[in-house]
Amino acid sequence: MENASHATLLARIVRARTIGLAIPLLLLAGLLTGCALLQTGPLPTALVDEPTPSIEPEATATITPGVTALVFWEPLPLDRAQGLLLAEMVHAFELENRDVVVDLVPWSGYGSIHDAIMSELPDGELPDLAVAFPAMIAQYAPIGAIAPLDPFLTDVELGFSQEDLADLVPASLDAGRLAGSGREVLAFPFAQNAVGMWANDTLLAEAGWNRAPSTWEEFEQACYDVAAQTGVLCYPYVENVSTFIAWLYSRGGRLLDPTAHRATFNEPAGVESLALLRRLIDAGLAWRPQETYGDYQAFGYGQAAFAFSSTGNTPLYLDAYEGALHNGVEPFNWHQALVPQANPDDPATLLYGSSFVIMSTDPARQRAAWRLIRWFTEAPQAAQWASELEAMPVRLSALDWMTDTLAAHPFVATQVKGIVRHGQPEPVFPASLEVQDILYTAILSVTQGYADPQTALDQAALKTNAVLSRQP
Image (tube, rainbow, N blue to C red; front, side, top):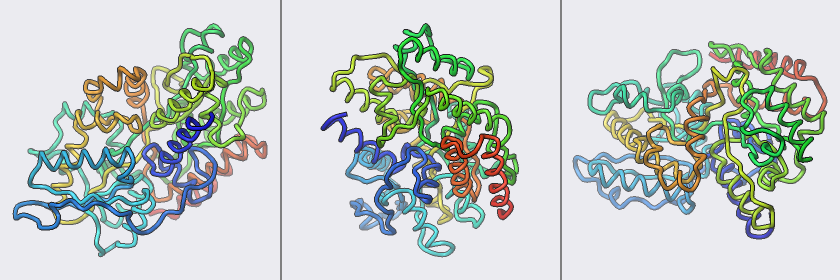
């Protein structure tokens, strides 16, 4: 892309990958290792340990008797789109709930929130409400720093009805459950997304395909067909743990066993996932773009039949495509579909993202914090939060409220109904970051030709098991 279009795309990518609304836990591992797992490239500016300046709500200056004051630590700058939207929605909550005021404290990313919470544990000054990734939640839970949400979910007044539960994205509550330690819900979705497959429908049609491939065998064949008929290559890849896990899930595999003490990603589902990528590389159909963010640009410019990425990266693909049109690329049809499956009758992909956590503070403030979570995730508000396209609505019925969004971007309905509803969460366990780093290295060793898939994943499994053995 050129000039303003290129700058706009890079700015949005840096924002999304830095503040984390479209970034899963997997990116956090990359930050620790110097490799951003959604996309390799230069690191964002270093995380700091102090919150960025915030505008204190006037109501917090003097709390009226009978009014509950909440402190909410969140990762979004209040001078950018998502942060502004969050502040607007919190203010709307206050207007509807005059007995609650919210001190919204923005930090410079999820990592800063995590560092601040850890520095205050066990007896320091904690917020009432925060947002965190699964690896962080897994560190708070064993020391009793967060309040289980089950009592609120079943509360007579503020709980969820069976209709409410059926309206939630199916696996959304599982994303807040600690692996291997029962079914207690410890977190509730704040910004959830799922991995899908972007498909260039125009290229597929030219190659004789009237739909996106739904199985891995079809996907591989479509790659060859598109190249043979159009000369366009298949897939611009980056070494990406989230994509690997989505492929693993789509083949019926799992990252760990149910106890979260043994790796299972080196079983056939994982091996074949990396073997497919290696075959496409060897055939010249998959390539790693040399330029930063080249995967977005390659797809947006019509230079690839497919791309794999988060539903939350939709704005980035839209920007890439619009930039390509501005620079003279002919329009083409494209959309995001579910990743191909080993068994289309039992589909799965990776569901990931950040979640609300209620800290173990005063019971009255905990209840008020739950009221904010419940309000924020009701269908009208879930639809408003998803309107920026950087997070999927947590309720399926939110689509009924997203008329303007669906008119502009019809494929959002497919993202919700055809991708996110089939998402399965990453396991929540304390050693998540270390395991992500180990997996990233294994993927890199395969794409760089240093090891075959079985050897790379077996070695990674041995290292992972050693790490998991140190967990409680």
